[in-house]
Length: 68
Image: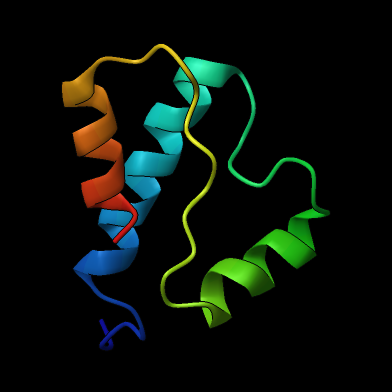
């Protein structure tokens, strides 16, 4: 199998995105088209989706850590 063009950072970001979708019922950047969201995430290093109100401090810390 060849070397992939992405690493663990992408996997960790994806875990955060999955948890965020489980909390909100919507994917990160749901207000954008799927291609626009993909472009935003792939080209903007410090982009982070909006986090829901009312989540615990620990959940917020976990998500922020995933989206770094």
